[in-house]
Length: 160
Image 1 (cartoon, rainbow, N blue to C red):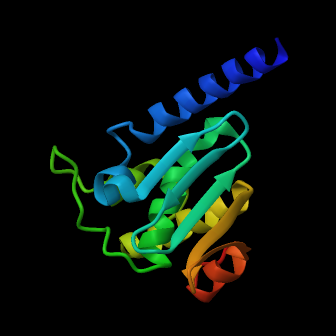
Image 2: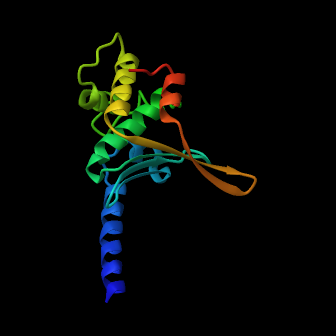
Image 3: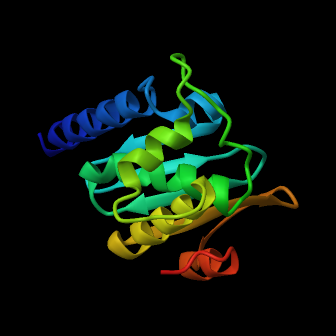
């Protein structure tokens, strides 16, 4: 009986995660296709992108923060990892970065989108407890380690 209950709970949480992962409105899914996953699990929200054989994952210990973790990952890839995401547009022609900045800019001001994005990214990093995890493939092994998110942001000139 206990196994049946656990199977039911696991099935429901995985079904929910799959639905979130394949949602058509996530810009990271639109851009990176199958190399991105946006998941709301039972106890956390996760955004993972694997554009090459390496992956970067962000986790917030709140499944309701799925929008936040997605937007954080998008801004991180754009401003820290230097992916050319700014010109990418949705089907209606709106740039993804503009939509995300409109949601996340809060009191951020700046001369350009980069400045506003850096401010928004710093604000999210201090407001939410976000964990950064990397997976790298080295010598036939998969190596997964956490990384110091604050140090990475500081190295990219993103401070609060």
